Image 1: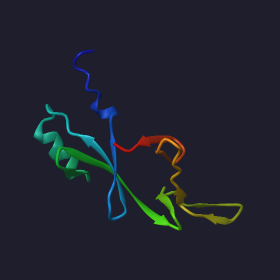
Image 2 (image 1 turned 135 degrees about the horizontal axis):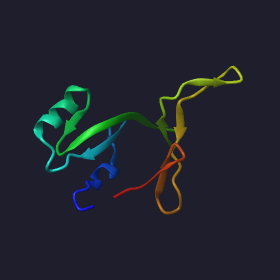
Image 3 (image 1 turned 30 degrees about the vertical axis):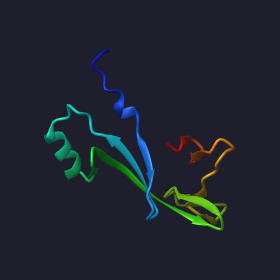
Length: 105
């Protein structure tokens, strides 16, 4: 399928210095300006050649990096924190929420 745009499956996750994790998708070259404007009017932000499709918080606490899953709730009537540790393996790769594996580039 020559015309199939795989860029939608290639997000970039950016950890900003001000404690925000951005999920970015490159705007396809052939995307009409009207579609970009519609996405922005529906709440997405644009940063350069990317649309911001998600924002979460991150922080460093006691030498550990934490990610705000924004999941709230309780287990056996005990409140559970939405903040989870971002583990880093020996190769310098991190895993968010136990499923998104990333490497710094």
